[in-house]
Length: 623
Ligand code: F6R
Image 1 (cartoon, rainbow, N blue to C red):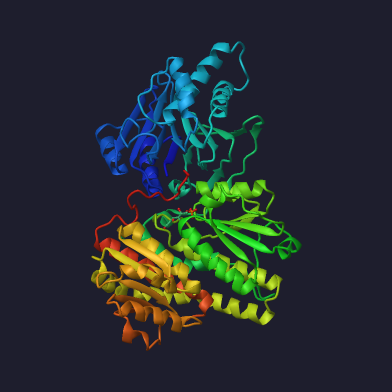
Image 2 (image 1 turned 180 degrees about the horizontal axis):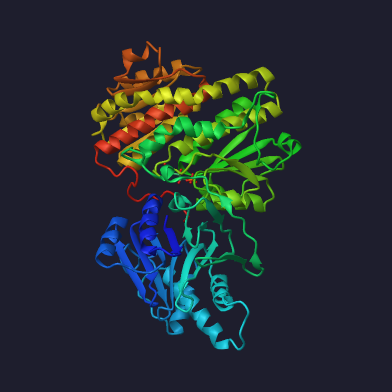
């Protein structure tokens, strides 16, 4: 949701701003804008409703010159997606221009105060309040200033600190001040900001994707920090502390990671990347000597980990589905009781949690507001709170006591695919790890490792179903409703398959544990409602088969995901997608692949915008 970019250096800022905003499109937005300052100190502001392309078109007609600028994609919260509400917003008599990501909860009160001071508002946004507030603090402090300060930026720093200390809520801010040409001030609290370090140039962005191919040096700004950035310098300060050291880290993504690489959509590219992203998630984490998994960043001693007697997995959306698979895995392999909680519920509940409870917050983006709030609440209560996270340096990664990175690379398609399978494989390795700390035998550990090693090739083989899935998609793409049914390890697979279809094709789809279907949803079954059955070989195969018969008996068409070699299924199902046979505990990782492809092809056939589905945002930074 919302994306910020900014540039200061020796090139035309607008070129990077447009390209950077395009790379942030996946976060979700409905309008875009940019502001540059030219060498004659004139401010150039351009805004457009809709796509970044519309802004780029405007820019062709009215070039915004200057080697410093800020840009923004806005996902409307306060006020409709109009040009007036689009960022950047100006404050004072244009002495401030800024872009904001986040939500200012006390904006009403601040707006009233600023209006009393004489500031005039043109938009309905909370952001314009920040712009005028910075202007107001700056003007007041400047009026008080009596003697010269050694630090040339002391005044704007004090003004921005004063303004941000009055804000309640979340913000990532990129601010330009008329009196300080050539300087970007970047501040954050709860909304991510990264800074790319170059040769006589710096970039600011909401995440690393706009920096790929431009620099391999990155600084992750932390909460309460303010960066003062010129072409040649970068200073980081912390509110109430002053200058703090910052570490410049290696940025490991390259331009190809954020390009389409010949694929028509990011979602398809990311589905196809899964053999590699699974390999990356497991790299260096399987230990044959002890037949276990190893994790460098849990930051808990083996004694602490051994005394864990309950695990809470919390997450939202697709990550919550990964958590559900994790519940089956942990209970099966590690015999630890697990609860899976929607983060949006956990944050406001007060469940009795005793010592020995460990929390894992599972998140691709590391920025999901509800997941972050749930993590903070559990930390506040003193429970060790770890993260399973993809985006390096994200807020949740920074705030967790420790955790595991997925190393899936940038996931740009809004519908999560490769991050999901990386989450599930990480949970599988964690289940192995906890199992080996407890009762799981050396031989069992070895067997699990051997199976995990085969996984990337099994997924590669599974991807061969693509043409068959496209054929099946064409047959069913006009249906208005779908059911997705699975049991045990593959009940969450059904939920995730249904969510993928809903998100990108806007078809109503429900995932259910297959046997639950007769307690209500079976009323939906008719000849127009396809049911997708996930039915690998294993403990509940026969049971799922009975559920399938129940659907067939009511005239419902059935698409089955079944293991190669299953002779029985073709007799009953209308269409079968055969996937490689594997151990039951790995089957969610195989079976989800054809469901991702099914959703993808149906959405394409229906003419939907697969990578940027309506109303959705990639990182959901509001409650
Ligand atoms: C669905 C999807 C969302 C996210 C959810 C949580 O395809 O991507 O449901 O899974 O918004 O996001 P993260 O994992 O970033 O916390």
